[in-house]
Image (cartoon, rainbow, N blue to C red; front, top):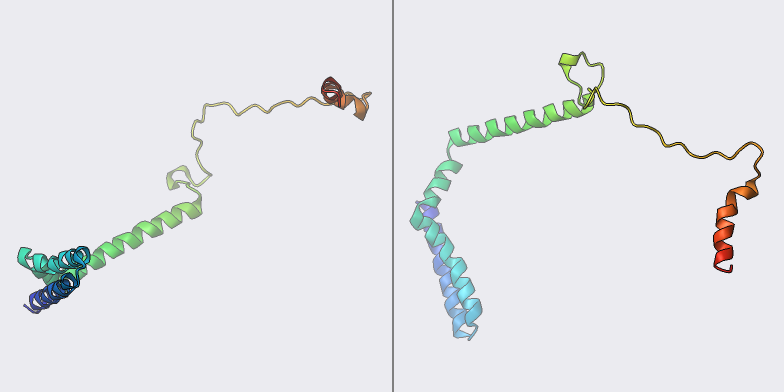
Length: 137
């Protein structure tokens, strides 16, 4: 009953402020203020205020929020333990993370060309010199 009275008073005050704003020829602002002030009245008329007040003062509802909080903490703690273990599963004996495709071959490494033992350092830049000569540099 108290919540409905407060919401109705807020709506009445908002509509009064909207009327004063409209009197000052600021109709767009007055319409916006009137819209905001009608929201609490609409909540009272739909019964949402009763539902919120019953939920806020209900020990069962608060116990439900506590259970949801406990579930959230459990989810976070199990996630932290999984990250700390590195994604290992206890069924595998904790030997290490399992391979995604155990039958797949390992990636091959690219072979880089090494200069021959008799080659000098100047011969490595022969292709660069050719490009520079082509452009007249």
